[in-house]
Image (cartoon, helix red, strand yellow):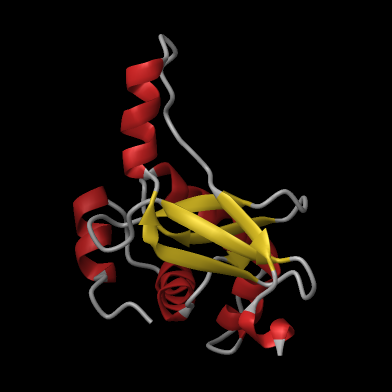
Length: 142
């Protein structure tokens, strides 16, 4: 859980109104230790009240547009969302277990250095980088 991220500060800084849906979606993402699918976010927010799927999608899109969340794609066709608030949630690698398919964050492996290195060796202007490590998680390895 992220206890450093402040929903009030985020909404104020981005000029967004405080709504129950925004509070609920943000809370679910802040409590997660990994990126979540829309289905997982929806399940989490429904514990706090009645929020429909369209509202969750709109809220995630709004948070993505203002840089509060980022999409995480790991090659399985399912989009996941994680907090992107700096400096507490810098871009980082993700690990996918090839057995159970659980996706987890590899917090200590920042992708910012890779972006800087890529800009030095190419004339292209990369804007984002995605690093996905695939292997067996510790639970499945037992």
